[in-house]
Image (cartoon, rainbow over all chains, first blue to last red; front, side, top):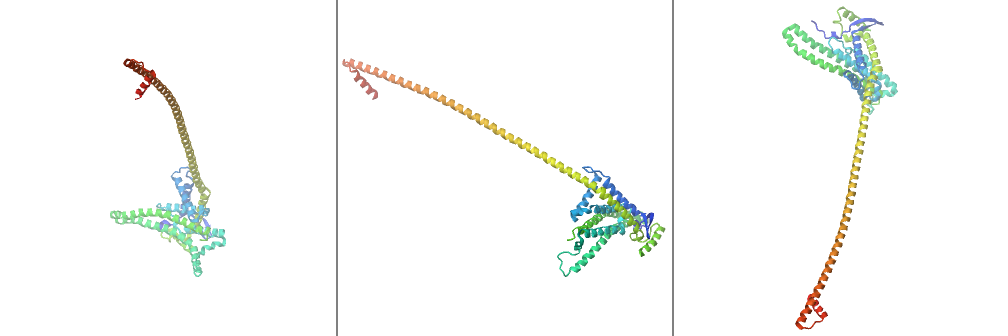
Length: 249
Length: 184
């Protein structure tokens, strides 16, 4: 029994739809899980009731609504609510697909850099274009912190510009790396249980208790990480949007 | 495009042995386009669901609840104000009734006192009149008695003097002498 911790990240093309240039466009397992996430969010938000006293699922829908709207208001102000649908979609999509990914044998959409990079670029371009559209050239004030001595200003501006363009990189890699590393660690520790049992027999099964316990603990940690990374992604989005809305620090 | 070439190669490889042992899957660029297209479709679909239907619905529910709570609180406040006002009116009426009762009591007491006083005065006057009459009568009786005593004494003195001297004394001298002795 060979245990390959990387196997879970494989993309399996299911139906090839066609080609764009040299690129093959196919429905893959990743596609399926993206739409699973969309379906779960759609069900959660639309199929739940509108009672005055909410039931469980309605509470979850309302808590996520209030959670995201509070997050936006506290970081980007009331004007940030313009981006409520965007931030809510990002947060729910990442959170739900991360949580679905913890179920064994499923696929984690955000464990692929291309997905997180696309989402981070979406945020980056939104910030860039909305900032320029709303503030015009004043948007570039975000590169010029106030109260910096003239002598070091060029250096500061250089660092600010660099950090601005590195934001989408850190934004996407953080989510991608967290999901990837967490799932590899889970798979490795879970693999130990089976490996010990198969190779050492009865002693191995007893020895497998420790990695099994660790796997349970790691699963709990991964549940936290799945939510936390979605939260971090969403709140960073809010902070970047705040730059676009109020560029004058 | 070097990535693409590599992607094609590993793609062939993974196809051969069921997806095992290829490159590191998250960096296999041959699937990037598929994932991007899927992501765009899924994300746009979710964005439309969220912005058109989900957020207005949930937001509306939350707002309706907020309004219901505020309405109920306002109504409760109104009812509380009403009951407070009723209580205040009741207390006011109670205080008015109490002061009215006190006033009636005082008035009655004063009237009774006044009539009792008047009766007492009338009685006292009557008694004083009777007393004065009685005293007058006593005085008259005493004067009369004293007059009788004087004339008896004068007669007795005159008789005594006549028996002793044989001469009849002067009546006025006897009366003078009796007066003097009575005074003495």
